Length: 640
Image (tube, helix red, strand yellow):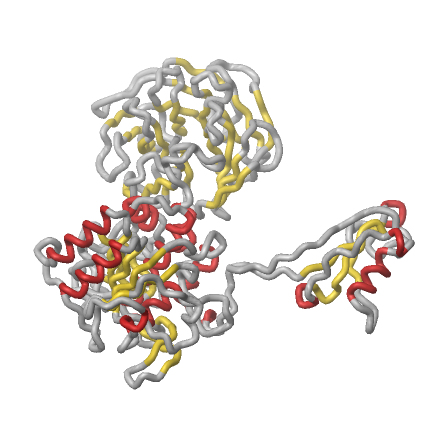
C-alpha cells in the first residue's frame, strides 16, 4: 500500500535566541499530526519540574490562533527544553480507503492486507483470457493495459477487447482493481499490469480456437500469469476429459515459465473441468464467506486449492455492468470469481520473486494454504484455502539463493497436532508439500538417517519406546523401526560422533540423564545399550542438540522452561555446562541451527502463542537478532 512519507529533523543544542536556532524542520501537513501535535523533552536537570518527570517526552499543543511554525519556535525556546519533535499520527498499513473494502470479506479471508506490506504485484503481467475489459467504469482507470488482443477477431488494441457481457471486467477487477484510490472496491494485486485477451463472446462462450489464439498471444507477449475463468465440464478425470489443443498450450506456457490458473467449474461434480484438470495448471475451487467449500464448486483429484467464490447472498463485489449495460458494483459468485484470487496472489508472489519457476510458485501456494477440511490434501478443498500473506512470505525465499540470515539453510519443519508435516522455506527440496506421518501424541524430530545430506522425519512413540524413521519427505510407512529407551523418554536427533550421519539419542528427564547412541536399529528389534551415558541437567529440562563450537559433532543442550535458562555441553561427558544464559519464556520450544552459515549452531525459540521463531546469532543472553513468523504450529523442528 502507499504510505505517506515525510522528513523531520530532530535537534539538540542551545535554545532561546531566535537568531541562533537551527533551521525549522520540515513542517508536515496538519492532518499528519496528533491532536497534541508537539513532543518536548526536558534536559535531565529540569525533568523533576515537568508534568511527567519519569517520561522522556511530553505532549504539547499550539495556542489558539498560533501557527505550527510559531508554536514550534515557542516550545524550543522554553527554558530547560532539550528537544522538540512533531507528534505524528500513524495509520495501519495495508487497509485501503476504498469504500467497499469493508464488504470485501474475500480479500480479508485470504489476508491480502498483510500481503500488501510486501508488494502489490508491480512488475508482473497478468493475461486475463475472458470476455474482455470495460473502459466506461471508474475503478479500473488507473491501468494502462498491456498488449490487448482479441482471439476471436485476431485484432489488437483496446478497442478490440471491449467487454460485452461484464464477466471479464469483474474478473479483472478481482485480480487488479485500482486500490487505495478512494473509489469502490479493491483488488488482490493492484500493481500488476493487465493483458486483456478477449476469447469469449457476449454470451460468455469461447471455443478451442479462440482460447488457443489467446494463449498463443499471451505466451508470445511474455505474460507471467494466465487466468482462465472458464472451462469444459468433465465427467471423467484428465486425460480422458481433456482438450489436447489447449493441453499443448498449457504445456507451452509452463515451459515458458508462465503460471496457468483455471477455475474448477460450477457443476458441483467430483471432476474438475478442463483445462483446470491439467496437471500443470493450478485448479481453483470456491469457498463461501463461512470459509467452507461452496456446494457448487467442482472438486476431485485434480483440485489444487480453493479461494473465495461466494454464494448468492454473499458474493464477490467488483465494478462491472449488468445485462442492460448499467455500470455499478455487482456481487457475483462462482469459481470464475475464485480463480482470479489465486491469479492475483500469484502476481504478488511473482512480484517479490520474479525468477520463481511455475513449480516453485505452485508448491509455495499450496504449501502455505490453510486447511479448512481434512488435514492435508482432500478432494473438496485441495491443499486448502489460499492465504496470500503466507504465500508471499513463502515465495520470498529462493532455495538457489544463499542461505538467508533468518533461517537454517534447509528450512524448518512444522508439525501439527494431527501429524501433518510441512516444510517451510528455505526448502532443500522445493517439491515437498504437506504430508502425513505418525499419529497424534508422537514426538516428532528430523535427521539425516541415510547420510545423503537431507533431513527427513522421525517419530518417537513415548507409550512404547519405539522409533519410526522415514528416508523421504513423503507420506508412508517407516523405513526404519526399532525400540530404544523407556516410555516417557525424550528423543534427541543429531550427528553425535561427526561421521555425517544422524542417529537418535535420548534424554531421560525423570533422572536428568543423557543416553547417546551412534547407530540405528532395524527390523523392529531392540537397539541395546547406549554407547555412552552421563548425567546432565535437572528433571523436567527440555533437551535439544547442536554443534555449538563448530567441531562437526552435535552435543546436548537443555532449556529450563520455568526460568528460561539455556545451557549446553561441548563434549559428551558429565560436568558443568560449557555455556549458560537466559533466553525464552515458559512454554517456548527450543531448537538450534546454523542460521547464518558460519558452521556454529546457535539457539532459537518458537513461541506457539504468536507463531514466531526468535533467532539468536550468538549463544549469549539478550534479545533475538531476528524474528521469523511461521504461524502457530504445534511443533517446530530444524530441517537443516
